[in-house]
Length: 156
Image (tube, rainbow, N blue to C red):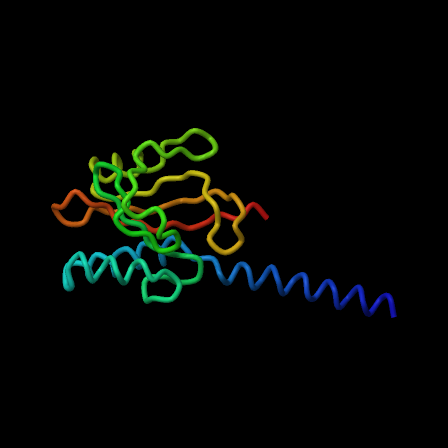
């Protein structure tokens, strides 16, 4: 009986790892979500786009653990898919636990290259654990706005 219980527990544990892995977005999916968001913004305007992006996992701009964030070049959060309390706040000086100035650095990437990837530590939206995150950001046309989406890199 103990052997059956141990096997059952092992199967459950493996299933939970598979389930958690299936809920993680990929770099390709993050880039696609940003492109979809840029197209939606251009077609529908700022107000409608941000309202849709802010729906997070209840809307069409979140997938698995992927969600969107939007900042202007001054560091003001214009939209956030998981934390509406950040909207309207200037987060230019926001630092991750390692001291990286996340928003400032994301803006600098976009100013320099128009788009790119950046690694930092952030709280996972589903597990709430601090994890390494790699975010893809892109400038919105000629506007001083960045749209981004990040993937979480599990330490397991």
